[in-house]
Amino acid sequence: MKVRDILEVIDGVLVQGNMDEVCGEFAYDTRSMKNGDVYIGLKADTIDGSQFWEEAFKKDSKVVIINDIELDKKSLEKWSDRTVIIVKNSLEALQKIAAYKRILYGNDLKVVAITGSVGKTSTKDMVANVIAQKYKTLKTMGNYNNHIGLPLTLLHLTDQEVAVVEMGMNHLGEIDLLTNIAKPDLAIITNIGTSHIGNLGSRENILKAKLEILNGMKNKEIIVNQDNDLLGKWHKDNDKNTELKIHSFGIESKCDVWATDIKLNENGSKFICHLVNNEKEEEFLVNVPVGGIHFVYNALCATLVGKILNIDNEKIKNGIESFSLTKKRMEIQNFENNITVINDAYNASFESIKASLTTLDGYKNRRKIAVLGDVFELGDFAEEMHKKIGDAFIDSSANILVCCGDNAKFIAQEAESKNKNNEKVINYLKDKESVLKYLTENVVSGDVIIFKASNGMKFFELCNQFEEKIKKL
Image (cartoon, rainbow, N blue to C red; front, side, top):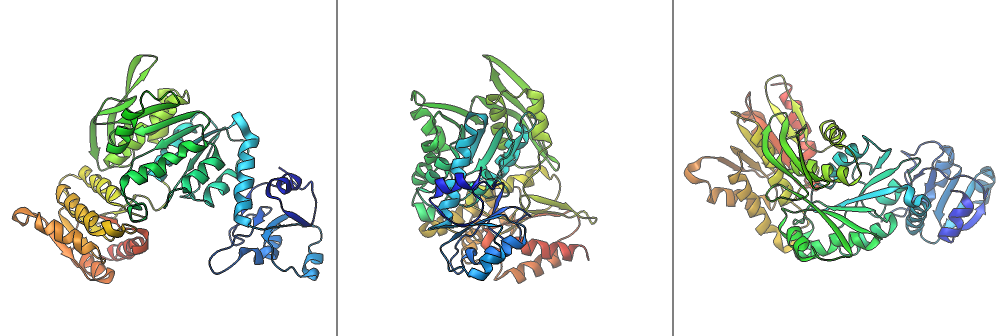
């Protein structure tokens, strides 16, 4: 892709430079860009990245794409051997360039797109590792799953055969934009929960938003979690729809791929994976290196993707058993004093907290402490959903609840109301400092502690502070 190609796609103005300059990877942050990246200056709420165009040239960028800002003639002369392109809207330009690059790859590239209320990133990690057993694979970096991150991911394409991308959203219409950029060949919806329900008003609207993923697909081939109530119903309602090709995975019902004999332990989980191949049922044992029932679902989804992409069972098994999570997801630290800390505090919803609590099931004969905080973006549903989290705690194998946050009081209240015979210890504390003090004074050898809350609660930092305290115990 050359400068002249980009100019045609984005309707930009060439201020100076070489029309035949080849454009490789793109970056929007001069602090982290690699030498030679094309720099695109994006406008934020308080600052326009376009003003850092000279910083990009200092990083050996040959091409910058910026908004229509005032440019100093002397500065331009200083960089007369570099290319400067002006556009009306740099974000739209980024998205158009990414869509164009996707078109250039055509059928030589398979795009697998993943969305869902929870589990997008962990599913992506496992799916991508399975695919990588056979094909050159690109996957979304971290959780770059929005209107900026997805285009940047596609602009990292080189010689890959498959791209695995996440698609996130907060409102209706956002996935529609992303899918029309990525043009997926295969879509995955992990589940429909309550994340962002405060913005969308109902789980039915969340389903509607997630199904926008089909809008950018020529052949509407999609994988769904059959055990999710709304997705299961949607599958049943659309089973005869000839415009769709629907695959399913699950535990509670027989699907295209399903699991039996599930066992959770401290080192992860294992189960028998069943699938139908050429009308013949096959099965194999899978060991997932991370605990929790939600990772069994991830493994089933990854198996189904592997099956669709003609990857043999042994490679599927290897991909699942060797995968690693994106940082800040389910980070498990085992300390010398036999204390285990599970840092899963990157983000949270009712569904993800409920799933994370199942991770504790694998720790037998140990005391388990759940450190929980507020879940954001619930709007009018905040009290109801936090009470459901309290119910989930009572139903879990956790022994002690420690929580703080404005809405976390509803977690504690509901848990207290269901705490028969005071079997569990429930603590609602005023702030994170109090939580840290409580944990430091009460945690003993053998304890397992899990941290979970919305990212804005900064429980990830709280967990790190606690880990430093543990080292001194």
